[in-house]
Length: 433
Image (spheres, helix red, strand yellow):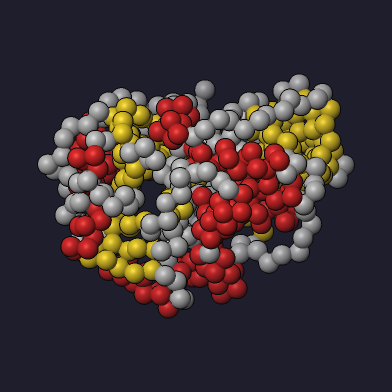
């Protein structure tokens, strides 16, 4: 059967245990079995940054809330990403305002620009153990054109009072250990976490606030019943007043209208065992994380125990069994480096929208969700999870996005296959030229 969410030539998505983050993530949060019949105020489908944050906020408000996760908490894109807590989107503030208009655009730039602070506050307030590292993330320019683009974005953010600056040449070299890049934007609002440790710890906090988690069984059906929603999960049936859909690129056939709103894109990573101190002193010696401005960016960072990750956009193809591509990426930055053994190999799926911005979707009355993270999942979904909880609880709030019905991504299947082919070509040619 044709998989509607994966290109024909892509391999299967590895289990979460293949992710580097599983090595330091800590225990799974508790999952409680469901009775044959359940009743709740709010049901949340999806156990990532968006859903667990929404569950925390609903539990704190005293709402009877059940979160249903098909696999385990963080098993989707949450536990597979680079752990970079970046503000906003890849687009600059002027581009965002142009897409959303004055009212929503200004609110989006302001609210989502401050979203990393929401993650900081959660870590501090609840004592989340997630190896947070508050050094800013390096966004490196790979060409003169993208250097000018970063300089323009830096100026636009500075005009809004954001703590963003450019670094060049020797200063950048001291951070990266590589002469590959001559300029980079440093956004001091951003930082890094261990994403799987964060979400598991946050889920434990949410459970302590009253959230019930039912993990390991996917939702099989979602049907209206009067002014409520009937959710079938295994042998259980849940009647909920409101439903928050937090599945993004993992929605599947549950709500086809939401699934078709975005085009799935892959993102993959390779990682070493903990590096010897000799090489840690040469490769990102100050411990910074980096992503660059290629059309499909390269990502580099360490985990809490010194494992080095290199990643990129695209589905992990069947033929990429060994670390040949990762070794090529390392030679691109560090041509004199050793040949590392790549112990971990994993991938995930992100949702790309037509306008490269997230969308706030209400497919039917009583069901709400945000979709289309476009590779910026942690801080935005922390914000959106809080926002969706407020909406489900009946609070009157000003949202940074208009609430609307789903619209299909144009020629979605063709676009997905075309993107996959173009990414494969670029990843193995122009990316390292």
